Structures are given as structure tokens and as C-alpha cells.
Amino acid sequence: MNLLKIKSLTTTFTGVALLAGSLLFPIAIAQDNSDGRYRPEGRTFARNAANFFDDRLYEARTYVTGTDVAEFASATIFYPLTLSFDRPNGAVVMAPGYQGTPEVYDWWGPMLASVGVITMIIETNTTTDNLEQRKNALIAGVELIKSENSNSASPINNKLDVGQIGIMGHSLGGGASLRAAEELGSDIKAVVPLTPYCCELGQSFEGDLAGVSVPTLIVTSAEDAIAPPETHGRLLFDAINSSTSKVYLEFAAGDHMLPSNQGSDLGTLGTYVYAFLKSNFTGDEKYADFIAGDGEDQFSSYETN
Image 1 (cartoon, rainbow, N blue to C red):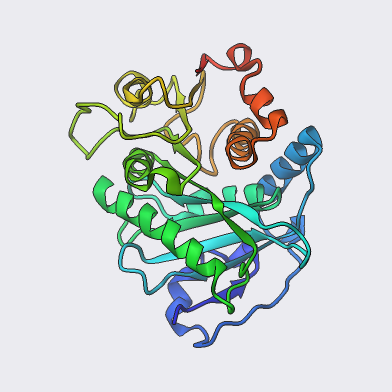
Image 2 (cartoon, rainbow, N blue to C red; image 1 turned 135 degrees about the vertical axis):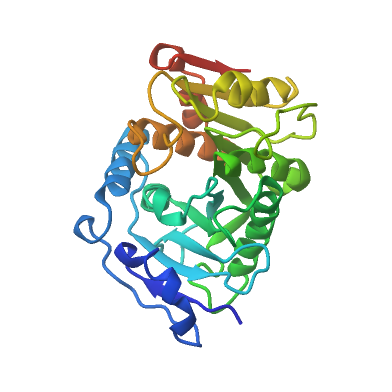
């Protein structure tokens, strides 16, 4: 049985190390996750996105599960608080970067969950897991979140649309997300590598990504000195077949940690990732129109096909 414990968002990640001492039986305790009780940025970005797209804003909840999955240490799931008659929501599974931990990215959970995207952030078995291990973790994460939907003890039981799942990752996790997308194929609807590192550490990218057939959004920064776009993100974008729907978004400013809590323009980043996911989850033209809009005027490089 998975260990499963509901927490307030302020203690989501700091409590992971204490999970072994948590309750042996699943519990679900509703909590008021107001702006004052977790990082306010994610909620603020979500509110702005909801206002812009005229979307619903949800209260967010979170719990930890997946501690018995071999491919990763645990998974924190952020989810919107919905009513019994609400439609199921889509979901995204995220892998951290090399030496990264989930708390480095904890703005993503309330950002996406507050606008109706269930968000799983994986804690890798070790912070130095390689690209292959992160790829396997993402694939296992997709399977886990599907199983949570059919688990009567899970807070997201019957609340997930299993036909609307995406994956994303930062740095080495971003490179891994593309490799995972090759294997997952039609099991996912979108892949979002964030300042991706192309390959195993110390290696250079060779070959192509012809196996990536799902819509792809690659986010980079012109100032990234760890994974410069010309040898990482842009190279990966060009390696994906032109027949695959793909978007290349390059910020003019920001270092390799652009997608983390310390990123310089998280509101813009979160809005574009949200719109990209929803466009491919739902087919709603308002999101597609946004992605196809004036990105060229906002970024140092912006390309769609």
C-alpha cells in the first residue's frame, strides 16, 4: 500500500523526509490553502492566468504518494479541489534537474493546480540520478498518476482525465522528458522540457528525436551558461521532426534555473506552459491562439510550426 498523507502546501516538501514515520493508512483532510499558508507566487500567477483566459480558479490541495515505486523516491501531487459533478482534470508529471529536489520547484504545484491541472513533482531516488533514470522515473510517474485515479483511497480518485496527461522536466529532467516522450507516445498529450540538458552529463547530442511525436514546448534562456540553447534546447528542437507540433521559446534573460523558484519571470513562464498544456489537453482555440500569438515580440526567439 502506498503511504499517503495530506499536507498543507507550506509543509509539502519539508515533510518528505519524515514520510517513513507517517500514518500507515490513507487519510484525506481538507485544509484551507490560502495565500498566507504557502508560497504566494504560484497562486498569484494562477489567478492572473485565470483572469486572462477567463478560467476558473480552484483551491489547491497536496499529498505525497509513490514511496513504494522503484523508479523514484516519492511523488508530491498537487490537485484542484473540485466538486463531485465537475469534469475530471488533466495532469502533468515533472522531473527535477540534476542535484535538484522538489522544493526547488514548489511554485509549479499551486500555479497549475489552481487552474485545474493536477501536478505531480517527482523526488528522484538520488539527486544525481542520470538522464536514463529520470526518463524511467517520468514513465513510472505517468503510470502512478493513472493508478491514483482508480485508487478509491486517493484524493484524485475519478478526478483525472487519463487522456489528458503531459510530462515536463528541468535541465537533465528536461532532456529525460523527451526520451520518455519517445517511449510514451500517444499515452501523453504534451511534453515540456525546461532549459533542457540534452544528454547524459559530459556527452554531446547526436542523432535525432524522430521518435517524439507528441506536441512539444521547449523553453530555454539566451543567458543559460550550463545548457546553452545552441548545444542543448535549440539543438533538441531542431532534432524533432517538422511533422510534430512544436514550439521553441527562448527568454532573453535568466540563467539555467529559470524554471525554479528563483526564476526571473515565472508568471510569463507559467502562463505559457499552462496554455500549451490546456491547448493540447482540450483543443480549446483560446489557448492555441495564445501560443500562436505575439511571442516573437516578447522573447529573444519564439518559433512555432
